[in-house]
Amino acid sequence: MPVRLILARTGLALLVLTGGALAAVGGVSLGPSGLVAVVLAAMVAGCLGAGIAREGDGPPSRQVALDAAWRTAAVTVAVLLALSGSVVVAGGAVTLLLVVGVLGGLLARWALRSLRRSRGAAVAPVLPLHAVDGSWARGLSVSALGQEWVRSSAALPGTWDPAARQELVRRRQEALDELERRDPVGFARWLADGATVDSDPAEYVSGDPAAGSDAA
Image 1: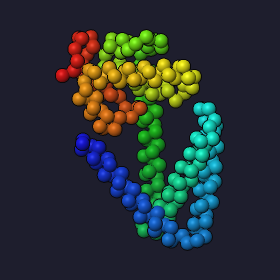
Image 2: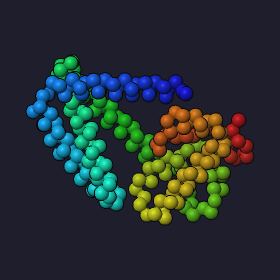
Image 3: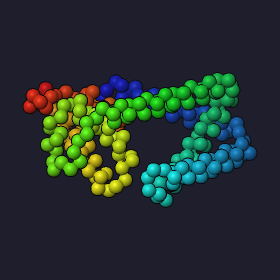
Image 4: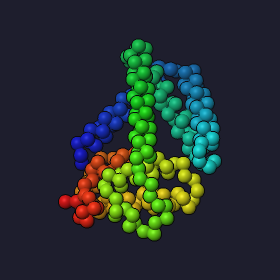
């Protein structure tokens, strides 16, 4: 297992344990009246989450709204209890700094992901939508295949026509199949490092289709 993935999982586990401990301290310190206030806040947040899910770009779905409601409510409870526990353990000033730091980190991550998606959409080649097979992928460079994956990842959430969505999913799979064919080891390394829809597999894969050879 890559060291980077081990460190990420270890950090996540420590974060969860710390948050759980703070939430327990916060729950004890709030008392019954404080816990009632937390539950009410979670109910309000859950309703807002369900409303936002229903008003999203996708088709309305009761299950989607319910999932958004309980997840938002659960996160609200966890955050409020953890903040309360942090105030008890570290004080209000330290808690405020932590909140500002976390919000700043989330905002920076969101901005970075948006920038990467926009760049991928801007530079990716426009490929024919109705290719009969995956032959189009064999004629592209590794870089172009990676750009196609990133570009189509950004396009997929806004594609609701069933035929167009199926075609987009098929083309994404063909791009991944070709990348794996070029360099199975590099492709496996991309998967092991936590492959996501906005990460470029071309950073891990080598091989040039113009030369007609697979990666070593």
